[in-house]
Length: 268
Image: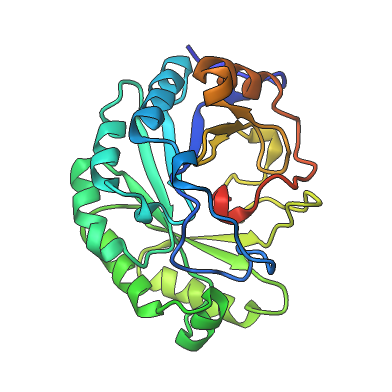
């Protein structure tokens, strides 16, 4: 049976941060003050994750997105993907990744049921990419994109974050690359969590509060009703059903800002 919030929005989409770890430290994602990683015992186990998804599916969730940190840094990611896709009611399983490890995992992930991927790419210039990501190798991303296409993780979507004063000159080249390689591009204006500054994603529904159909699960088990909000409900403290109910019933009409999380540990 579908879930509806107070504003009659159908909630069927759960974004899951599998880990707060990432192999990159992108300037728009990692705060200047650095990161405080969760202790490993804080991170949900596979069994806990599967319980959340099973109950979510019973309540009306039919789409799952794996995010991070970098989701491909989650141990046993292929096995976990297979178990999630086999849960009754889950119709779509997708992933947002930086693409660095995707060439290694694309075939196996497709074989166990991953439907498609979004890959972050904010420039076509190798040196500029290394600066933005604080050390990343853009050739690994290109290899990941090719693997995603080869093994059918499609449509492959590219996430381009518009970083003021940094990559305006890169936008045209990335767009041309996507057009030439049958990739769908999404332009995302850099957001500010603390003040709730965001706009609608160009090429997607993200940022359109009137159509928001999602809840978020942090790597340590907090169900959050809104990216730009402080509210969150622990599955460990409240139980999974009660955490879902509270997140659903207290989902705001629109985001107003948050200081309880950062992009690197909630996955955007």
